[in-house]
Amino acid sequence: MSAEIVKLNVGGKWFSTTRPTLFAREGSLFQDMLMMEDHHLENQPGYFFIDRDGELFRFILNYLRSGELTCPKHFTEHEQLRKEAEFYRLYELASDIDATRRTRRTVDFVEVVEVAHPEKM
Image (cartoon, rainbow, N blue to C red; front, side, top):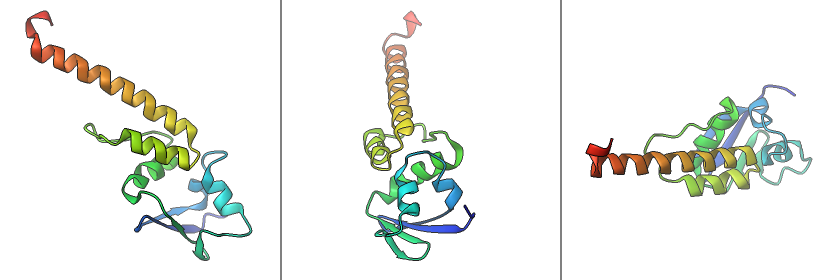
């Protein structure tokens, strides 16, 4: 597999990456997309259009690059990002999103209790 550059237009936003990055997760949509003889998503060689949320795709691509979910502290679109992860068949990422949501809810609850009852802390 070559390290050729792949251009992705996701919901009108352009991203550039390499084939190995897109092949980083076994069973993902990207593997099928790049391996199919009939590239129905391919506009021209190396250029693909995906009709999904381009704003959230940066989190998907960063996950493929690093293997880690990295979202800003006050990120609020976990449910939508999970749907995107499922669409791309990145089920480990979907699980990571669920775990992050559970952790953040616990932290938010503790922060509310601290503000409401500082003497108990």
